[in-house]
Image 1 (spheres, rainbow, N blue to C red):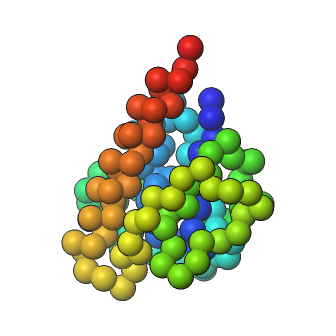
Image 2: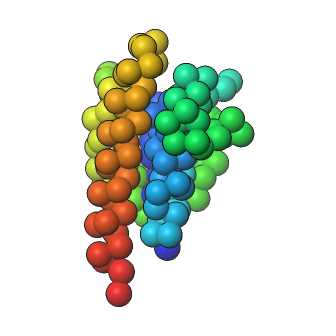
Length: 132
């Protein structure tokens, strides 16, 4: 089974939501991980709340991780950094260009989560089609 890493600088919001939604929607096709080139003391509480409210997924035990804390991914996806994407020692396989909702209202978090969901489902479909 392929390992997919969702990566952003701090691993505290979008990449964490992608890890949770990947596990929820696609664990039968790929393993989901998230990481960053830096960490935060906690993941974004608004992301935790929105994912719980919209999907019933509890992210409260997730934590910010460095790239060295996860297995070597088969697929690395950047979440779309507004300034510069982190350097991870290899090219990204995809850039999702999802706006960081940090500091915004709930609608921005919901929009980010829904875009991540659509991307996860498309990735799941593409990877499932590659299986023998």
